[in-house]
Image (tube, rainbow, N blue to C red; front, side, top):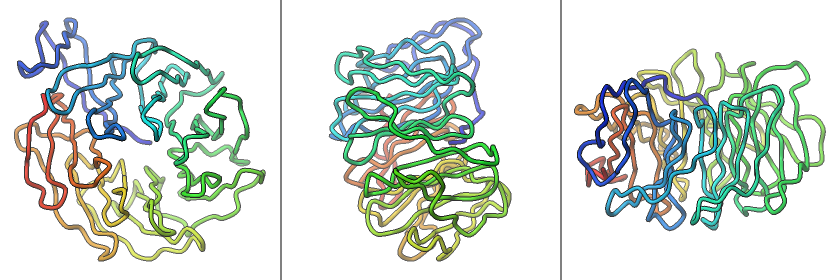
Length: 320
């Protein structure tokens, strides 16, 4: 998945916004959050950071609960397993790591010999996880981290994003060749190529309900809704800037797009409902729905984490 390039330089040791989040950054260190997600029980937030760590924060207090150290370059993404017991992180250092979500103990450490790992996520049932690295998507067994299957682009195009389908066997990919493709475990080639986008695909997200997918293109600043069975475009929604990260709510009724601000759109109506723009913080780097779909968490380029009402866009709380 494409990530924001916005960073901030910390000149002196300090605590972010005088909060309970006790993180002191070194002189001249640059840091920014690449992703943010809720834990399955909504009590914690997990952030992947460009300072080579991932961090878990208590939603109620803003306190840092756990810092995952071990990567040697920025962490591109971090996700919980569906049961909340494990965390997967993918890094620019070409490694993907599986951690105990409670203790922070490193369980598995996987390295790609050639590419940095841009995306890593669990299947809906938690039995598998995928890793996106260059022109391949690798599927692993979650219990023992055994490689089960590899999807490779025969033309060498680089995958920009990927996610599992609801059946736990299908995988949907976005690529630099402007396509979204469907892959199924057990088949060497993609089984379906969606109607082509006008530019490189920056993000894909599958609806938890029904046979639908959203994808964003780098060229025309549009978000497209597809039928996953036929690969046909159902409708499109314009955005003011390039949509970089897309995510459905768990009920499938809404999806958000991170573009420096956050736009929330209705899937059924195929239109944007409102935009979250943080005037105090200027740039929003990442955002996520909580599991119930009632709240949205955002993290800005200045490191501030905020909670918003997902239905109205009203600010509820500043976490840190």
